[in-house]
Length: 95
Image (cartoon, rainbow, N blue to C red; front, side):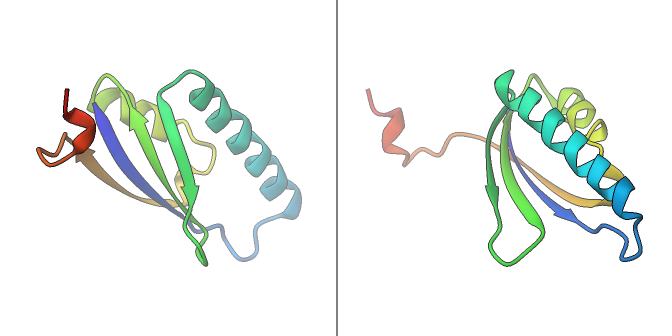
């Protein structure tokens, strides 16, 4: 199943710099691992925001939840999930 996922990151203003650096490093490593595995298909930065828009291709809701739940920055995120399906006007579907 395909999902568009917008993640807004809201790190605490007074977060310990060492804790922040560690969390960001773990976040990057984990997200790249999931990307290399093929389930996190694409990730884009939202210009002017501490946000990203990502496309996931996973087996279902439970798997997406598992991936997101395991993000080191998950406790600091507001997440909006949109399940996707093919559009009948998409020329990529023409055979």
